[in-house]
Amino acid sequence: MDPDREPLADLIRSIAIWFVVFGHWTVIAVTQANGTIDGVNALGRIEWAHWLTWVFQVMPLFFFVGGYANAVSMGHQRAHGGDQLSWVVRRYRRLLLPAAALLGVLVTAVAVARLVGVDGDSLGTGAWVATVPLWFLAVYLVNVAAAPLTHAAHRRWGLAVPVVLVVLVALADLPRLAWDDGHPVSDVNYLLAWLAIHQLGYAWHDGRLRATPRVGVPLALGGGAVLVGLTVFGPYAITMVAAPGEGMQNSEPPTVALLALAVTQIGVVLAARNALVDGRGRERRRRFAARVQPVVLTVFLWHM
Image (cartoon, rainbow, N blue to C red; front, side, top):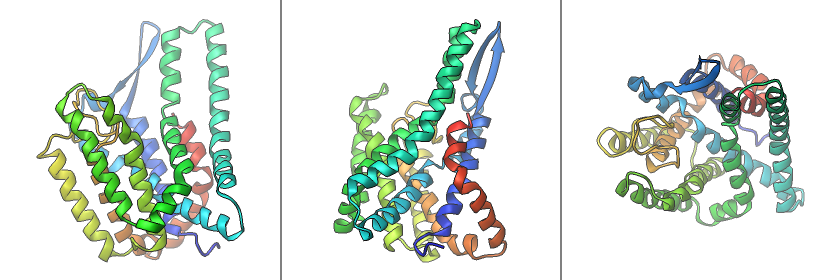
C-alpha cells in the first residue's frame, strides 16, 4: 500500500457518497400531473428536516479530502520530476472524461425523447436534475487548477491562508445580509469558501491538523458553537442546502455558516480517526472503502 495513502480519506469519501445519494433521492419528490413531470423540494414543506442537512451536507468533507489527495499527488509529481501543468492536465482528464460520458448520454437521451414527442418542460426538468452534480465538479476543477499556487501558499503561510479566506467569506456575506435579494459581490464565495476547505486538507496532509481527539474535539466543539450561534441565534438559515422559503441560502453561494459546519465535520472525523480506521470492525470498513472508492465519481455523476 502507498505509505502516503490515508485510509481515513478513502473511508470518508466512501461513506460521504452514500450520504449524498440518499440526501438527493430523499429531498426531491417527483410529481406527475397532466402528463408533465415535475419535482418538489421536500425541504420547502418539512421544516424539521432542515436540521438533517447538518449531517447530509457532506460536500465540505469531499473538498477537505480533495485537498489531502491533491497534496499527496503533487508530492509524487515533484518527487518524479514532473511539472505542475502536466499534473493539472492529468487531474482534469480523470475528472472530465466521466463527465463527458454523462453529458453525451444525456444529450442523446433528450434528443431522442424530443423526437418521440416528450414535452419540453419535462425534458428541461429532467435534464436540469440529472446535471445537478456537475456544480461540484465545476467548482472542484477550479480548485485543481489553482492547486499548485494554493499549495505553495500553504507551504509558506500554513493555516493563515484558510483563516484569511474565512474572513473574506464573512465580509462577502455582508452585502447579502444587508440586501435580502442578494448582491453579486457575494458570488465570490463560490470560489473562496471551497478554497478555504481545500486548504485545510493540505494542513491535514502535512500534520498541521493531526487526526487525533486533541485536535479534532476542539475543532468540532468550536465549529459547532459558531454554527449554532450563526443559525439558531443569528441571521443565517438552519438548512445547509438550498430550500424554498429560506431567505439567505447557505450553499448558493456558500456562507461563513457553511464553513462553520465544515470545521465541525472535519473536527468530528479527525477526532474519530483511530476508532474508524483501527477500531473494532476495521477490516469490514476497509473492505467497504476498497469496493466503493473506485466508483465514487461514477456514482456521484449518475445517481440523479
